[in-house]
Image (cartoon, rainbow, N blue to C red; front, side, top):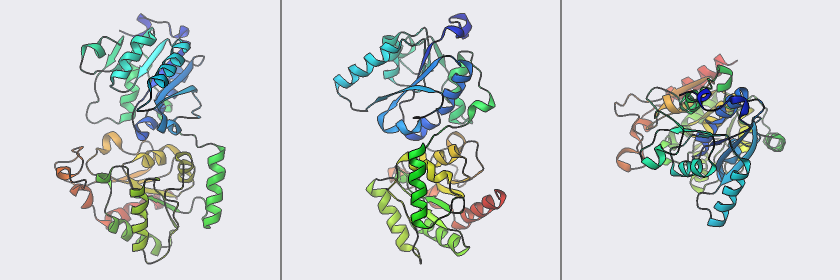
Amino acid sequence: MSISDTLDPNRIRRVLVTKLRHHGDVLLASPVLAALKRHLPDAEIDALVYQDTRDMLSEHPALSQLHLVTKRGSLLTEWRLLQSLRSRRYDLLVHLTSSARGAWLARVLRPTVSVAPIHPGKLYRNSFTHLYPAQPRGRHLVEYNLDALRRIGFWPEDADKKLVLVAGADAERSVDQHLRDLGLESGKFILIHPASRWQFKCWPEEKMAELATRLAERGHPLLFTSGPDAEETGMIQRILERLPFPAPSLAGRLTLKELAALTARARLFIGMDSAPMHIAAAVGTPVVALFGPSGEIIWGPWQVPARVLTSDHSCRPCGLDGCGGSKRSACLEIIPTDRVLHAALELMEQAR
């Protein structure tokens, strides 16, 4: 069934796109908004995301309204959100996450057309007018998200597939001041973001310190960043203590919008499979990324010059929380510093 069988695209006034996942997942859904706006230039495109991921989509040029939900909101908060969504009278619901919340939204909002990935359960299966297959191996998550639109007859073009992240004027000004204070020049420094909210995705601190030392010895200015979590800022502090020289750091001091603005000014981003890596891809900064248990085909840097470092372990990508649940991943820890250094130098040379 195509969308033309059920709804005239010219009569779609409002669309709701939902992505209730983590920061990187939400950013990788940003092309869906752009593709919808191209197909439906007169429609209002709204999105629903978790409160803490709002910066990934706020100020997206295709977005009319951004609705926010907390992961553990009160009944009153949930009721107010539902009333706000109902008042929009959506004609199309694009649900990009397999969750019961999406099924209930489809039933309560009653859009003419609703599309979601296939998920077990009669309630879920009977809540949507269109379902599309689960993510196959060998395709990036961006393409999988766009399958929702393909399923209803909206075929994305290559121009639609770019990640979109708008830092905003306030973040731009803040970052410019940080760089002036640190004496760093835009386009000249390497941004190193060693941390991840998931410990099993992190490269050993001693190797990251060795890499930083060898880059600095070659005359490359460095800048370290991390999220505000104490484990992440503690990691940066331990890495800095291993260096034979002082290195600037903005660890724990930036909003996500500021991190995006800062990354856009970097010559190169070095980091792990994490939301900051996807931010680097979104702002067009070349990426060196280290992957362990997670799959680079699905989650790798999207449409940006990149080098992805992995091991040849036959068991990866396993998707597990470290080997044996240990929070440590042998496939990641074994990656040698020489390989990462070579990748960084090669990528910078090619990007000149």
